[in-house]
Image 1 (cartoon, rainbow, N blue to C red):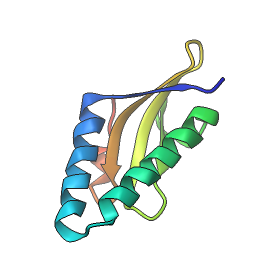
Image 2 (image 1 turned 180 degrees about the horizontal axis):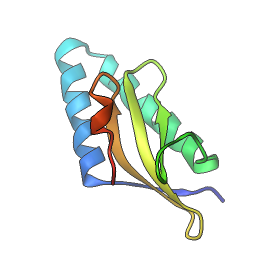
Image 3 (image 1 turned 180 degrees about the vertical axis):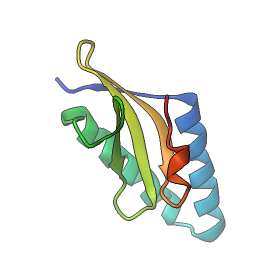
Image 4 (image 1 turned 90 degrees about the vertical axis):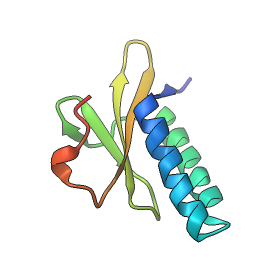
Length: 98
């Protein structure tokens, strides 16, 4: 059985903001962005041990989009909490720190 994915309110807001931005510029891009998120969630649920960015916070870059998912893994309860969907052009000093 894979890991359960939980999305924080902050990450949910950032995802909605990204979708809202893409809606302004394209009909298909928002749907493709959502599909890419779903692929990333599936990948994370099977193997969440990606690069550690800060202390216990890991990240996974989305393919074809300038975003990275920042998350923490609880191995005991098999839960992944996505804490941010961070735009890669933002200042790296503003990386989520939980």
